[in-house]
Length: 360
Image (cartoon, rainbow, N blue to C red):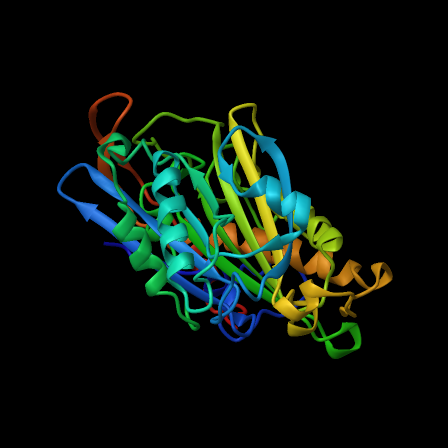
Protein backbone atom coordinates (compact mmCIF):
# COMPACT_ATOMS: atom_id res chain seq x y z
CA UNK A 1 0.00 0.00 0.00
CA UNK A 2 1.47 3.41 -0.96
CA UNK A 3 2.92 5.37 1.94
CA UNK A 4 0.82 8.27 3.21
CA UNK A 5 2.15 11.64 4.33
CA UNK A 6 0.79 14.63 6.19
CA UNK A 7 0.56 17.82 4.14
CA UNK A 8 3.49 19.48 5.88
CA UNK A 9 5.72 16.49 5.11
CA UNK A 10 5.17 17.30 1.44
CA UNK A 11 6.04 20.97 1.87
CA UNK A 12 2.41 22.11 1.99
CA UNK A 13 2.11 24.48 4.94
CA UNK A 14 -0.85 26.87 4.66
CA UNK A 15 -0.43 30.30 6.15
CA UNK A 16 2.28 32.11 8.08
CA UNK A 17 1.98 30.88 11.66
CA UNK A 18 4.06 27.94 12.91
CA UNK A 19 2.35 24.74 14.03
CA UNK A 20 2.65 23.32 17.53
CA UNK A 21 4.99 20.45 18.38
CA UNK A 22 2.46 17.81 17.29
CA UNK A 23 0.67 19.95 14.71
CA UNK A 24 -2.52 18.64 16.29
CA UNK A 25 -5.46 19.81 18.37
CA UNK A 26 -3.71 18.23 21.36
CA UNK A 27 -1.07 20.96 21.23
CA UNK A 28 -3.65 22.82 23.32
CA UNK A 29 -2.49 21.77 26.79
CA UNK A 30 -4.87 19.50 28.68
CA UNK A 31 -6.95 18.49 25.69
CA UNK A 32 -7.57 14.77 25.08
CA UNK A 33 -8.66 12.79 22.03
CA UNK A 34 -9.83 9.17 21.91
CA UNK A 35 -10.95 7.08 18.96
CA UNK A 36 -12.58 3.73 18.21
CA UNK A 37 -12.20 2.38 14.68
CA UNK A 38 -14.50 -0.39 13.47
CA UNK A 39 -13.61 -2.48 10.41
CA UNK A 40 -15.63 -5.67 10.67
CA UNK A 41 -16.24 -8.10 7.82
CA UNK A 42 -17.08 -6.58 4.45
CA UNK A 43 -19.72 -4.10 5.61
CA UNK A 44 -18.74 -2.21 8.77
CA UNK A 45 -16.45 0.80 8.27
CA UNK A 46 -17.28 3.33 10.97
CA UNK A 47 -16.27 4.53 14.43
CA UNK A 48 -16.27 7.36 16.94
CA UNK A 49 -13.92 10.17 17.93
CA UNK A 50 -14.11 11.78 21.38
CA UNK A 51 -12.68 15.20 22.23
CA UNK A 52 -12.37 16.17 25.91
CA UNK A 53 -11.54 19.77 26.78
CA UNK A 54 -9.75 18.70 29.95
CA UNK A 55 -9.20 15.64 32.11
CA UNK A 56 -11.38 16.70 35.04
CA UNK A 57 -15.12 16.64 35.63
CA UNK A 58 -16.39 18.37 32.50
CA UNK A 59 -19.89 18.76 33.89
CA UNK A 60 -18.71 20.57 37.02
CA UNK A 61 -15.93 22.53 35.29
CA UNK A 62 -17.60 23.62 32.06
CA UNK A 63 -15.71 25.38 29.29
CA UNK A 64 -16.93 28.45 27.38
CA UNK A 65 -17.88 27.60 23.80
CA UNK A 66 -19.34 28.93 20.58
CA UNK A 67 -21.19 27.18 17.77
CA UNK A 68 -21.48 28.08 14.07
CA UNK A 69 -23.33 26.66 11.06
CA UNK A 70 -22.56 27.33 7.40
CA UNK A 71 -25.17 24.98 5.93
CA UNK A 72 -27.36 23.05 8.34
CA UNK A 73 -28.23 19.83 6.50
CA UNK A 74 -27.17 17.58 9.36
CA UNK A 75 -27.64 16.66 12.98
CA UNK A 76 -25.68 18.34 15.76
CA UNK A 77 -26.98 17.32 19.18
CA UNK A 78 -26.53 19.82 21.99
CA UNK A 79 -26.02 22.79 19.69
CA UNK A 80 -28.97 24.86 20.90
CA UNK A 81 -27.77 24.78 24.49
CA UNK A 82 -24.27 25.80 23.39
CA UNK A 83 -25.82 28.78 21.60
CA UNK A 84 -28.05 29.63 24.56
CA UNK A 85 -25.60 29.18 27.46
CA UNK A 86 -22.25 29.44 25.69
CA UNK A 87 -20.65 26.43 27.34
CA UNK A 88 -19.84 22.73 26.96
CA UNK A 89 -20.23 20.28 29.84
CA UNK A 90 -19.47 16.90 28.23
CA UNK A 91 -17.07 15.20 25.85
CA UNK A 92 -17.67 16.08 22.21
CA UNK A 93 -18.41 12.97 20.15
CA UNK A 94 -18.10 12.65 16.37
CA UNK A 95 -19.67 9.61 14.71
CA UNK A 96 -22.02 8.59 11.89
CA UNK A 97 -25.51 9.96 11.24
CA UNK A 98 -27.53 7.06 12.64
CA UNK A 99 -25.32 6.69 15.72
CA UNK A 100 -26.11 10.13 17.18
CA UNK A 101 -28.69 8.72 19.59
CA UNK A 102 -26.31 6.04 20.83
CA UNK A 103 -23.59 8.66 21.27
CA UNK A 104 -25.93 10.78 23.39
CA UNK A 105 -26.65 7.78 25.60
CA UNK A 106 -22.93 7.02 25.92
CA UNK A 107 -22.19 10.62 26.96
CA UNK A 108 -25.06 10.56 29.43
CA UNK A 109 -23.82 7.34 31.03
CA UNK A 110 -20.24 8.58 31.22
CA UNK A 111 -21.22 11.96 32.69
CA UNK A 112 -23.62 10.55 35.28
CA UNK A 113 -20.96 8.06 36.43
CA UNK A 114 -18.41 10.79 37.26
CA UNK A 115 -17.72 11.39 40.93
CA UNK A 116 -19.51 14.55 42.00
CA UNK A 117 -22.36 14.12 39.52
CA UNK A 118 -24.54 11.95 41.74
CA UNK A 119 -27.41 14.48 41.74
CA UNK A 120 -27.20 15.49 38.06
CA UNK A 121 -30.54 15.05 36.24
CA UNK A 122 -29.89 16.89 32.96
CA UNK A 123 -26.92 16.53 30.61
CA UNK A 124 -26.28 18.38 27.34
CA UNK A 125 -24.46 15.77 25.28
CA UNK A 126 -22.59 17.32 22.34
CA UNK A 127 -22.56 15.04 19.29
CA UNK A 128 -21.70 15.82 15.66
CA UNK A 129 -22.02 13.52 12.69
CA UNK A 130 -21.41 12.92 9.03
CA UNK A 131 -22.96 10.19 6.89
CA UNK A 132 -20.56 7.33 6.14
CA UNK A 133 -23.04 5.16 4.23
CA UNK A 134 -20.91 5.20 1.04
CA UNK A 135 -18.58 2.74 2.76
CA UNK A 136 -20.47 1.54 5.83
CA UNK A 137 -23.64 -0.45 6.50
CA UNK A 138 -24.95 2.48 8.50
CA UNK A 139 -28.22 0.66 9.29
CA UNK A 140 -26.39 -2.10 11.19
CA UNK A 141 -26.22 -0.22 14.50
CA UNK A 142 -22.50 0.53 14.81
CA UNK A 143 -20.79 1.99 16.70
CA UNK A 144 -22.62 0.78 19.77
CA UNK A 145 -22.95 2.65 23.06
CA UNK A 146 -20.09 0.58 24.45
CA UNK A 147 -17.89 1.38 21.45
CA UNK A 148 -18.47 5.10 22.00
CA UNK A 149 -17.77 4.76 25.71
CA UNK A 150 -14.53 3.10 24.63
CA UNK A 151 -13.57 6.15 22.59
CA UNK A 152 -14.15 8.39 25.62
CA UNK A 153 -12.13 6.05 27.84
CA UNK A 154 -9.28 6.04 25.30
CA UNK A 155 -9.01 9.85 25.25
CA UNK A 156 -5.48 11.04 25.99
CA UNK A 157 -3.04 13.86 25.20
CA UNK A 158 -0.40 13.37 22.52
CA UNK A 159 -0.40 12.47 18.83
CA UNK A 160 -3.75 12.01 17.09
CA UNK A 161 -4.19 9.26 14.50
CA UNK A 162 -5.49 10.61 11.19
CA UNK A 163 -7.15 9.38 8.02
CA UNK A 164 -9.60 6.47 7.89
CA UNK A 165 -9.90 6.13 11.66
CA UNK A 166 -12.47 6.87 14.34
CA UNK A 167 -15.43 8.86 13.05
CA UNK A 168 -13.64 9.15 9.71
CA UNK A 169 -13.32 5.42 9.03
CA UNK A 170 -16.01 5.43 6.32
CA UNK A 171 -16.13 9.06 5.19
CA UNK A 172 -15.52 10.43 1.68
CA UNK A 173 -14.25 13.88 0.66
CA UNK A 174 -14.00 15.24 -2.89
CA UNK A 175 -14.88 11.68 -4.00
CA UNK A 176 -11.64 10.44 -2.43
CA UNK A 177 -11.22 8.83 0.97
CA UNK A 178 -11.74 11.41 3.70
CA UNK A 179 -11.42 11.02 7.44
CA UNK A 180 -10.03 12.56 10.59
CA UNK A 181 -7.43 15.31 10.28
CA UNK A 182 -5.87 17.75 12.70
CA UNK A 183 -3.51 20.72 12.81
CA UNK A 184 -2.49 23.58 15.10
CA UNK A 185 -0.99 27.06 15.11
CA UNK A 186 1.07 28.98 17.68
CA UNK A 187 0.82 32.74 17.92
CA UNK A 188 4.09 34.57 18.59
CA UNK A 189 4.55 36.01 22.10
CA UNK A 190 3.80 39.57 20.98
CA UNK A 191 0.38 38.36 19.84
CA UNK A 192 -0.32 36.49 23.04
CA UNK A 193 1.54 33.22 22.49
CA UNK A 194 -1.76 31.34 22.34
CA UNK A 195 -2.35 27.97 20.69
CA UNK A 196 -5.20 27.12 18.33
CA UNK A 197 -5.92 23.51 17.41
CA UNK A 198 -8.41 22.06 14.94
CA UNK A 199 -9.74 18.54 14.39
CA UNK A 200 -12.03 17.73 11.45
CA UNK A 201 -14.24 14.89 10.25
CA UNK A 202 -14.23 15.41 6.47
CA UNK A 203 -17.06 14.00 4.35
CA UNK A 204 -17.93 16.66 1.76
CA UNK A 205 -17.46 17.59 -1.90
CA UNK A 206 -16.52 20.29 -4.35
CA UNK A 207 -13.42 20.97 -6.45
CA UNK A 208 -10.36 20.17 -4.34
CA UNK A 209 -7.74 22.87 -4.00
CA UNK A 210 -4.35 22.30 -2.38
CA UNK A 211 -2.17 25.21 -1.36
CA UNK A 212 -4.24 27.53 -3.54
CA UNK A 213 -4.06 25.36 -6.67
CA UNK A 214 -6.71 23.14 -8.21
CA UNK A 215 -5.83 19.51 -7.60
CA UNK A 216 -6.68 18.82 -11.24
CA UNK A 217 -3.74 21.07 -12.20
CA UNK A 218 -1.37 19.27 -9.84
CA UNK A 219 -2.35 15.66 -10.54
CA UNK A 220 -3.36 14.23 -13.93
CA UNK A 221 -7.06 13.30 -14.01
CA UNK A 222 -7.87 9.84 -12.74
CA UNK A 223 -10.95 7.66 -13.05
CA UNK A 224 -12.63 7.62 -9.66
CA UNK A 225 -14.06 4.37 -8.36
CA UNK A 226 -17.34 5.97 -7.24
CA UNK A 227 -19.69 8.81 -8.14
CA UNK A 228 -18.56 12.42 -7.92
CA UNK A 229 -20.77 14.32 -5.46
CA UNK A 230 -20.66 17.90 -4.19
CA UNK A 231 -22.87 17.08 -1.21
CA UNK A 232 -21.67 15.85 2.16
CA UNK A 233 -20.72 17.27 5.53
CA UNK A 234 -17.87 18.35 7.74
CA UNK A 235 -17.55 18.90 11.47
CA UNK A 236 -14.71 21.13 12.69
CA UNK A 237 -13.72 21.20 16.37
CA UNK A 238 -11.59 24.17 17.43
CA UNK A 239 -9.75 24.42 20.75
CA UNK A 240 -7.67 27.28 22.11
CA UNK A 241 -5.98 28.20 25.36
CA UNK A 242 -6.81 31.87 24.79
CA UNK A 243 -9.31 33.17 27.39
CA UNK A 244 -12.29 33.97 25.19
CA UNK A 245 -15.94 34.70 25.86
CA UNK A 246 -18.54 32.44 24.27
CA UNK A 247 -19.39 35.32 21.91
CA UNK A 248 -15.84 35.48 20.60
CA UNK A 249 -15.60 31.70 20.48
CA UNK A 250 -18.59 31.75 18.14
CA UNK A 251 -16.71 34.25 16.00
CA UNK A 252 -13.66 31.99 16.07
CA UNK A 253 -15.79 29.01 14.98
CA UNK A 254 -17.19 31.02 12.07
CA UNK A 255 -13.68 31.72 10.75
CA UNK A 256 -13.03 27.99 10.35
CA UNK A 257 -15.34 28.08 7.33
CA UNK A 258 -12.79 30.27 5.54
CA UNK A 259 -10.31 27.40 5.83
CA UNK A 260 -13.00 25.05 4.53
CA UNK A 261 -13.61 27.32 1.53
CA UNK A 262 -9.89 27.40 0.73
CA UNK A 263 -9.99 23.64 0.11
CA UNK A 264 -12.62 24.05 -2.61
CA UNK A 265 -15.75 23.06 -0.70
CA UNK A 266 -18.98 23.41 -2.67
CA UNK A 267 -20.91 24.42 0.49
CA UNK A 268 -23.84 22.75 -1.21
CA UNK A 269 -27.52 22.52 -0.36
CA UNK A 270 -26.96 18.94 0.80
CA UNK A 271 -24.04 19.68 3.09
CA UNK A 272 -23.89 19.94 6.85
CA UNK A 273 -21.05 22.32 7.75
CA UNK A 274 -20.59 22.77 11.50
CA UNK A 275 -17.93 24.28 13.74
CA UNK A 276 -17.57 24.32 17.53
CA UNK A 277 -14.92 26.33 19.33
CA UNK A 278 -14.08 26.22 23.02
CA UNK A 279 -11.46 27.63 25.38
CA UNK A 280 -9.46 25.52 27.79
CA UNK A 281 -8.14 28.55 29.71
CA UNK A 282 -8.64 27.91 33.43
CA UNK A 283 -9.17 31.65 33.99
CA UNK A 284 -12.26 31.48 31.75
CA UNK A 285 -13.53 28.08 32.91
CA UNK A 286 -17.01 28.02 34.39
CA UNK A 287 -16.33 26.19 37.60
CA UNK A 288 -19.04 25.67 40.22
CA UNK A 289 -17.93 28.62 42.36
CA UNK A 290 -18.03 31.01 39.40
CA UNK A 291 -21.46 29.78 38.40
CA UNK A 292 -22.84 30.30 41.92
CA UNK A 293 -22.22 34.03 42.19
CA UNK A 294 -20.96 37.11 40.40
CA UNK A 295 -17.42 36.27 39.28
CA UNK A 296 -14.51 37.83 37.42
CA UNK A 297 -13.58 35.87 34.28
CA UNK A 298 -10.61 36.72 32.06
CA UNK A 299 -11.59 37.73 28.54
CA UNK A 300 -9.34 38.62 25.60
CA UNK A 301 -10.64 41.88 24.05
CA UNK A 302 -12.03 42.08 20.52
CA UNK A 303 -9.09 44.07 19.18
CA UNK A 304 -6.71 41.16 19.91
CA UNK A 305 -8.71 38.49 18.08
CA UNK A 306 -7.56 38.92 14.49
CA UNK A 307 -4.42 36.77 14.84
CA UNK A 308 -6.54 33.98 16.33
CA UNK A 309 -8.95 34.27 13.41
CA UNK A 310 -6.06 33.91 10.97
CA UNK A 311 -4.63 30.98 12.90
CA UNK A 312 -7.91 29.04 12.86
CA UNK A 313 -8.27 29.55 9.10
CA UNK A 314 -4.78 28.16 8.53
CA UNK A 315 -5.21 25.21 10.92
CA UNK A 316 -8.62 24.30 9.50
CA UNK A 317 -7.29 24.19 5.95
CA UNK A 318 -4.32 22.03 6.94
CA UNK A 319 -6.41 19.71 9.12
CA UNK A 320 -8.69 19.01 6.15
CA UNK A 321 -5.70 18.30 3.89
CA UNK A 322 -4.27 15.95 6.52
CA UNK A 323 -7.58 14.06 6.67
CA UNK A 324 -7.28 13.37 2.94
CA UNK A 325 -3.53 12.85 2.73
CA UNK A 326 -3.46 10.28 5.55
CA UNK A 327 -6.54 8.29 4.48
CA UNK A 328 -6.05 4.98 2.68
CA UNK A 329 -8.10 3.38 -0.09
CA UNK A 330 -11.06 1.68 1.59
CA UNK A 331 -13.51 -0.98 0.46
CA UNK A 332 -16.80 -1.29 2.31
CA UNK A 333 -20.55 -1.39 1.76
CA UNK A 334 -22.61 1.24 -0.02
CA UNK A 335 -25.75 1.07 2.13
CA UNK A 336 -27.98 3.08 -0.25
CA UNK A 337 -27.06 1.05 -3.33
CA UNK A 338 -26.67 -2.25 -1.42
CA UNK A 339 -23.37 -3.22 -3.00
CA UNK A 340 -19.66 -3.35 -2.30
CA UNK A 341 -17.99 0.02 -2.71
CA UNK A 342 -14.36 1.16 -2.97
CA UNK A 343 -13.20 4.73 -2.48
CA UNK A 344 -9.65 5.51 -3.54
CA UNK A 345 -7.15 7.41 -1.44
CA UNK A 346 -6.12 10.78 -2.77
CA UNK A 347 -3.14 10.10 -5.09
CA UNK A 348 -0.04 11.80 -3.76
CA UNK A 349 2.46 10.89 -6.48
CA UNK A 350 2.81 14.36 -7.97
CA UNK A 351 2.79 15.98 -4.54
CA UNK A 352 5.56 13.68 -3.28
CA UNK A 353 7.99 15.44 -5.59
CA UNK A 354 7.80 18.32 -3.14
CA UNK A 355 9.26 16.28 -0.28
CA UNK A 356 12.25 17.98 1.25
CA UNK A 357 10.42 21.26 1.85
CA UNK A 358 9.37 22.54 5.26
CA UNK A 359 8.64 19.37 7.25
CA UNK A 360 8.46 20.95 10.70
